[in-house]
Image (cartoon, rainbow, N blue to C red; front, side, top):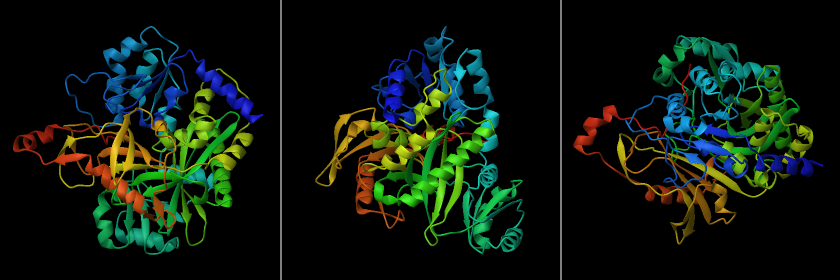
Length: 488
């Protein structure tokens, strides 16, 4: 019966007449959605596809306005005359953001569009590592042994760690943060002093015992029928070839032998419980959960909950499983629609557990790891590339990673930074979608294929030093390539 219900969902969105607008700096997170949903439009700021992407509007930034976060970019995009012209007079459109705030909520309402996300107030209350821990405890999805307290000195930190039996090596997180920027590994007072201002500014921090672990990530959708759960992805954290942030997310991979059936089943059950707990709090729709798997004990701990579309959404929805069934994100659209298609979450989740890890896919997030400011001399086109004789060549320009097929020598490159833009440590350069494994030793080490593809991709992304004149202008220049959501 599940296949019949899936076909009904496909048909519903293929015949969709209601406009959907995804407003974000790039369409990376929902990159394939226009293939599944008729009348889908991406409204973006960064030109990743050299104006060749279908269903994409790129409003002009005529005055080279600079932005501090994603919300400001989205305010610019929504308020732009080109966007207003597109949606003017249409009071049946639905708007989706990666990050949004109360200003965007108000602007969306004034334009008579429907925001199909939980309220900003609710998202902010959940998008907090302290709240995440408490929600997990309520749902019997426990974190690594920890305490949630105010810390005002190294001695206070260690006294609390001793009280809770956490040992002398700790991981400290502030309530909000992205890609490891506010995750601190502390083994000494010297380590603590590097981050003391950020730690002591918070009313509470989460301090955890350091464990020998690998990360896993999974997306789900909380609905009135229950929680639909997607495939479990392995997670890359802190590889210095990819990110300057020690605790920073930098990629994912998906293949059957990565986890045994028991681990997958336990993660699915934990994620269902978290989704049901979120729904009771009024949260409905798409979310992501990070887990930490202890390599010494095989225990599975809650890492964090991200109440939104996330960095793994593109890989989840373009995975072989979702491509042969339906993208998980369609359940989010259904939850906010008037259409009722009675697909049982338990049936779907059983199907996802059985078939979710078919094929071999991975993604690599390549950030700039150099020191100082540089400028892009030559950036590759987004598209399908082929590995030939230890070099890579463009097969075809494309705006869809699915076009890479399943050939292990083909991969998709999504360019983020363009020619003549400035790049700095931590800036997003490009994202690679691959058909091969990228780690070994249970995700603890990049394999030779990954090391090679990273080197080859970086080689075709040419940077140069700044001229004296450019250096004088840099204080007035901010690249949008790594701007994240603000913390209200």
